[in-house]
Image (cartoon, rainbow, N blue to C red):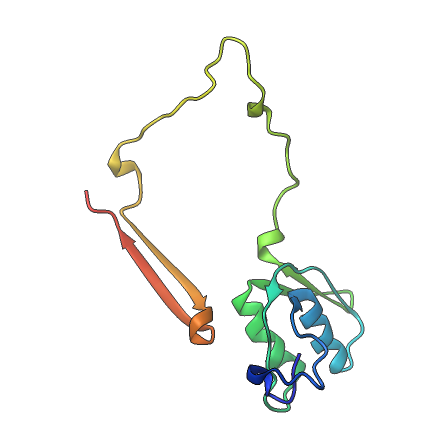
Length: 143
């Protein structure tokens, strides 16, 4: 994390985290603000860089990361836990379809009627090329 804001020209004199995982950045922000009772073990993702231009609270620095990377912050018995929503899934199950079963086809495709599927998709995201401004894209199926 760079505090001198000269990261575009490569001045990393005081920077400790030039690039790292999102968990490392969140942990560094919390430690810098005097927090030691937290758990970031369930946070996943990489962060290319993070600039702290002014003096700010831990909350004001971490909240944009939580929103952009879909991370939940939970307080559990005085411990601050951070968890990526993308990791909130069930344990992996064995895939039995990789085994050829006797008297069953190796591949089967079922086609549905066009009215069974969505006609439009709308996606909202944070655009890396526009300094993480919120953007959206829409796709419409022409029948």
